[in-house]
Length: 179
Ligand code: HEM
Image: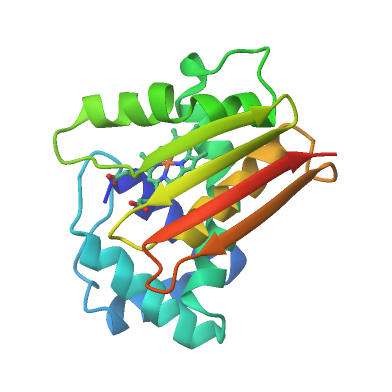
């Protein structure tokens, strides 16, 4: 997993909880000696272990935690890849272009980067469907990112996000509609 996601997870835990919670988490995950930086690609097991223990500690499910963290990630991701954003985009346009602009760029930056392939179908001016398929089973993160994008464009109160998750969690279909 991209180091940016892990450094943001660290900051999320430090700001939403506190620094000692982060230390406790890394200890429980057996990662106390790992320094996270945004240039390194880390094994996926690191994020699974951190989120798994964070869920136990907070009493939230891993899915709920992914969702909150996904929302939190958006302003930083937008800032980092701002050159790829068209100033005329709003929530649905940005979601429509994620796969062929932002995620494409992420893949080109490092051979080990593998953001999920998002199949996005624009159903109309105010409606689209995202099909998320990933063996990482981080659909909650995808849902959180969608909510975060709506908040970023100041459309959170008009955007309905309706996810349906497959039983094994590998597929999430997210219906997004603007009222
Ligand atoms: C500015 C827009 C975005 C940027 C810059 C971005 C960037 C990234 C990066 C760097 C990763 C880590 C990839 C890796 O470590 O291999 C990632 C993963 C991910 N992205 Fe995006 N992303 C964006 C928008 C979105 C959107 C709109 C969604 C969902 C609708 C999404 C869903 C995900 C998920 C769920 C993952 C976790 C990995 C997985 O499930 O396989 N991203 N993204």
